[in-house]
Image 1 (cartoon, rainbow, N blue to C red):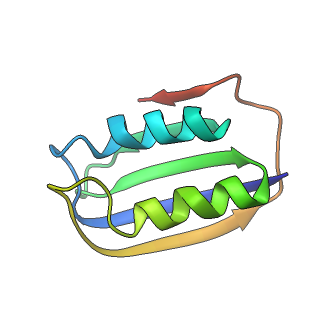
Image 2: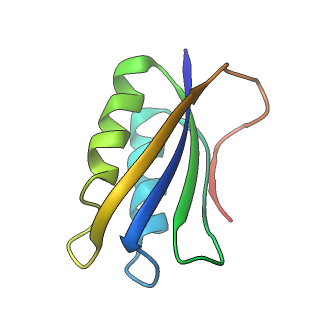
Image 3: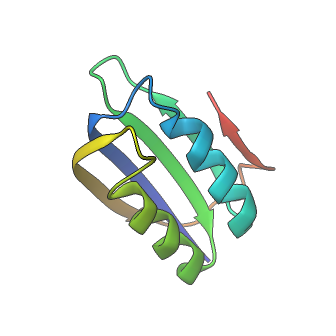
Amino acid sequence: MQRAHIIVHGLVQGVFFRHNTKKLALDLGLKGFARNNDDGTVEIIAQGHDDKIKELIEFCKTGPKSAKVSKIDVKFENPKNDFNSFEVI
């Protein structure tokens, strides 16, 4: 198990980034959340199997078609059992 804290920069709000992240995360069996931050970034915390986390990180590098990702920041953290599903906040 692994936990990733991801911050996605660029044109990532108003382009269904969180919705697509949730769909992929649920397909991958990940738990956590995606939310918009006041600074225009999208923040994601995802927890699950290492290979599935890597797939989500790869998605975050480009996002959905209408997104324009300029960079992502990823920090790996110790897994916790604080999520039951993956939610958009």
